Image 1 (tube, rainbow, N blue to C red):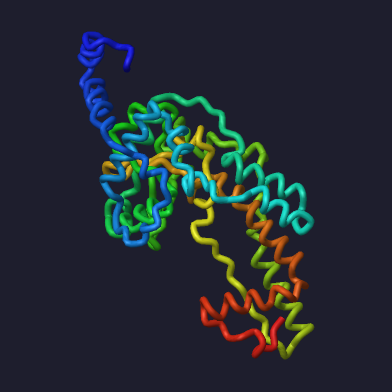
Image 2: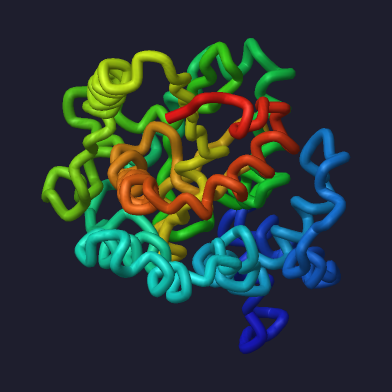
Length: 332
C-alpha cells in the first residue's frame, strides 16, 4: 500500500511467504498495460488457446482495482457484461407483442443480471472443501476437448482467466467442481453435496423462493406435436416446415451480476476462471433463460400472420443454410 513505509511493508511481508509473494506480484504487474482488454477483439477467431499474455493483463487489471472482481468486470464491459444490448429499445419494439409481466422479468435479467437474489453466509471450511474435492476425472482425461471448450469461452468473453494462486486473496470467492460431457460441453457441478453438511452453490441461490419464472420448456415438445397433428388434419397435402431454434451458448449470453460473480468460479489446471456468463449446471440458469424463451415463443405467435416476414425469412434461410425457396413449396 502507498501509505506504508518500506520498513512497515518489510515487516508485513515477513509474516508469511504468501504475503511477500503477493507484494512482489503487485509491483511486477503494475508495469503491465492492460488497457487493451477494454477494446473489442476483432481478431479472435484464429485463437487456439488462451494467451498467457492475456492472463497477465487480467492480473494487472485485477491488482489495479484492488482485487475487486466486480470492478474488473465493469471495466471490461463489451461482451463481458453484454453492454452491446440496447435493452430499452428491444422492450419498446416488443411491447404489445409480449406480455408486460414478461418484459419486467426481461428488464431484470438483462440490466441487473442473475441470480435474482443471492444472500448467503457460508464457512471457509465449506468453501475449501469444494476446492479440495477438485474437478471430475473426465476433466483431466480430455485435455484436447477441454482446451477447445475453455478457448471458446475466452474467445466469446464469457470468462475472465487469472492465475489460480490469486484465488486465496479474492473476497467472496467460491469454487465449484467441473464436469465434461462427451460433446465437450463443460458442466458446472453445483448441485452435489460431498458431505452431509456441505453446501454447494446451488443451495445458496434464490430459485426455491420462486423469484424467477417456472420453466415450461418441458411441455414444448408435446405442444409442437399437437400443433403438427392439427396442421396435418387441416392441410393434408401441404408441406409443414419445422424450425429448430438453437441459440448459441444461450445461458452464457446472460450475465451474472458483477457483485456476485466471484461465487461462481472454478479452477482448471493453473487457471482460475471467473464466470461472467451464466453456467450450464447452475440452478437459476434455466429459469433466467426462460424469460428469453417465452419472449421468442410469444413473438412467434404474435407475428405468425405477418406475411411481410416471409420474404425476410426466405432470404436468410436460402443464403445461409441452402433451404429450398418457400415459393416452390406448399407450406404452412
